[in-house]
Length: 93
Image 1 (tube, rainbow, N blue to C red):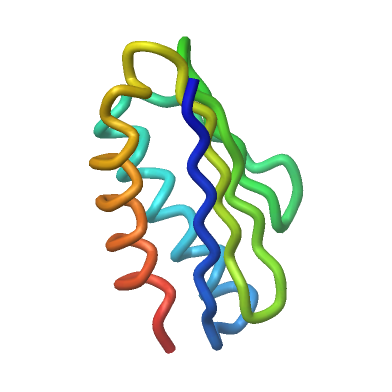
Image 2 (tube, helix red, strand yellow):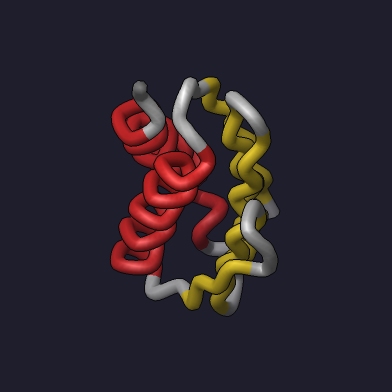
């Protein structure tokens, strides 16, 4: 099992940060067939067999935690690189 933890700084207003988080989740859902749902105004959860995690919005920061089961954990480096790049692009002012 592999864990990915990414923290992305941002200067977005709460509604803009939420829209960016939704775009990240939509991309993850598309690539990994994940089910996504908002737990609250600031926590977006996603899961499927072998993958689960949450994207938590804080003032000026987005925190993404993903737990990967086997065999997806074998691709942890690729997953982390793609998600990190997507978050950098979306969480810009």
